[in-house]
Image 1 (cartoon, one colour):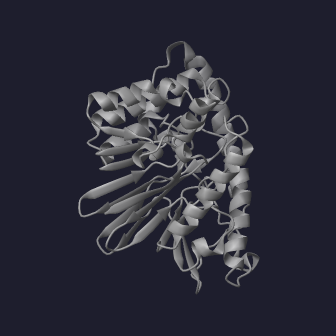
Image 2 (cartoon, rainbow, N blue to C red; image 1 turned 45 degrees about the vertical axis):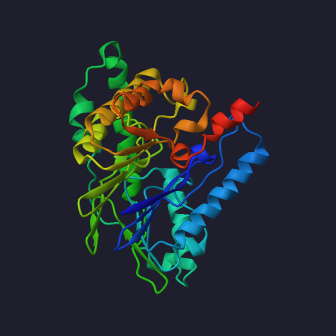
Image 3 (cartoon, rainbow, N blue to C red; image 1 turned 30 degrees about the horizontal axis):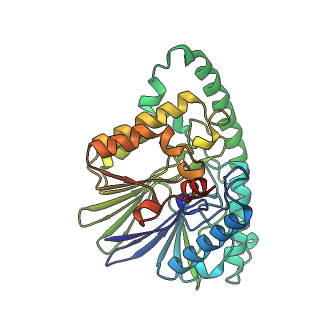
Length: 350
């Protein structure tokens, strides 16, 4: 099995796009690129250059792919819309009809209108009325995080979790009303919603988790799935947006999977004190350290979200130092390619 780190944050635009190639199938994970935020310490001209470079890299990689994976509907994880990325491909995507927040649902609806429309199909003609059902609150499956003692923070956490549960219940009411976006097999593209499913391509097995929180419990930005690709005993795990992971159960799952190569997104250190508090940041650090120490991963790409501000390494030093101590390769995508993360290169040149 071979893999290519197509584009990542450390190269100058937001992405975690990865190409995985086995003798059976070529798989492109999360073919999206988004421009860096306004506070990123680089001129806008450079940001747009990196954005265009990333988009071209994704398009080039898509030409090699048979399968496209979309872990969720944020623009740094999928492209809406470049027909050439998806044409002739099997698209294995996050289910847009459930475990999805309002903004991602709108993006997904627009994406499938564009995707199906580009192959001559009007999405509205195939959407069907929702089926009556209930949705499980996935917080109830978190055995470790649910029972973790946060000391003085316990009361505040209980309040936040209660608000989160009510938010989830409101989402369920919306899912019950959504007309269902369908999976279709068209002459130019096929779509399957992959949450919790397994697909086989010869001797290559591609597994997807059930929906997972995008960061903290009841994260308002929605849900994602993670991807595991196996071929003859070799395993690559792509975490998508678990943000660290912050949730202890997700770290435990990664440790149990014990991949050879781990594509691990980190916490949003540039949002410390805003959408990321110190308690959840420290959870993410402890979880990443456990993963480095307790897996046999030959390579950990620790990148997405992290290199969006110059002090990312200083703030997550525990993880990098532990990797050095244990003789494990913990690298940004830029470093894996023999480059400096652009946020450091730009900072040092000013």
